[in-house]
Image 1 (cartoon, rainbow, N blue to C red):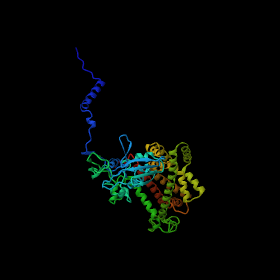
Image 2: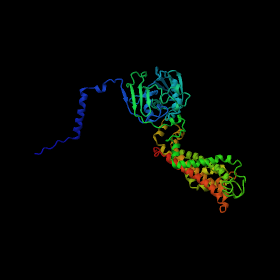
Image 3: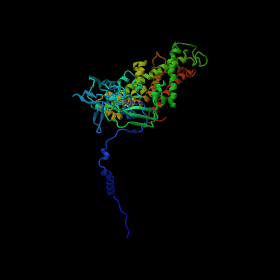
Image 4: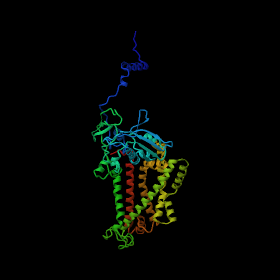
Length: 534
């Protein structure tokens, strides 16, 4: 007879496991759960990367938010059920209309150096630090008008509008209170107290060696008797993040390896484009110094070829005017028109796109149909028609170029707004009562800047080409010299004096090329997927 092996089912196995786990608990009932905590000992927890500063009021980064609450107190804290409870504040009362919140401050709270904690510290921190500097505090406390002092142990927060969420943003992680006497009248983000902060929290800073370790010691004068339990907290093997602050304090130029200008300067296309653009800008800036008489006077013999006369390195035109002076002065007009037209187009397009994307519905339909109508008209022909009807002047040319250029920006911004308006941070801003204008300008628009900046370089290049084309056709301002005007004058001499068109055309091509290279580099630099590359 064959004996079969025993079969163990899933339920019997789990039941046996539970029974075996219960044996030690039954032997010593409540011993593990009811044992009284004992003070002392060292808690060692890694913290990486290293915090740039130890002040969570000026930095909302993860490492700062991890270390900061050990050194600082907020007015309130949270219990295990996330219910607000007093810390330096023993309680609070809210007015019926929700616009005044009175916090009663605890007696005997002291800073780590023994100085008493006061209402002045609370008022300074919330009005001058959290509301103006803290990344999230700018939004959370935007409606905070004042902190009134009815007495030495009361701070009354006066709000422009009810904001219940503000009560839950007064813990040590979101709203650490700073000593006013150390920060008033200083550059708060660069204050010398930031690397070695002074707080009222349960621990005080004992030792901090960047890249090695951070040691916090128990605050023996902490207002909550018996807390904290650990004598020390050690955070070893910190990895330091390169900080721009160090370069600035050492007198550096402030262009760190990770900054946008630094990455743009190291980008091959960006570096070439910046050098070329710098040369063109130098030409525009020095035109009045090098050629004080301007580009219009007859300076030499007509049709002097380049190199024939050292006084005219690029030669003269058919009337004897200096081509080098004309090219230098032309750079002024071309850059000015391109930048001004691009700026107007950016403002108009961003406004239309932001309003359409934020509000949607009928507003979006009307604005987008207007955008569609503008895009059905060839942009250059529309510019020619506007200048031809209104009259040729720099103001008209700038307006005409801006009118035909804004639809592209409007569609770009609208697409980003439609995407971002559904994000949690935007919904949170609506919940706390932020106005539409504040949400658009302060929250969503900054997250759309990367594509707008890249598009700006394209707009400037396109505007320069359009302005030169209008001037070439005789629709430019007759009172200024620009590259299109020089090309139009030299067109009649193309067979016998090709240099008259070659030099202004070369300047135009090189400038547009520089802007295109900068645009390509900005696209790479501002691309979030490429930012972490070395």
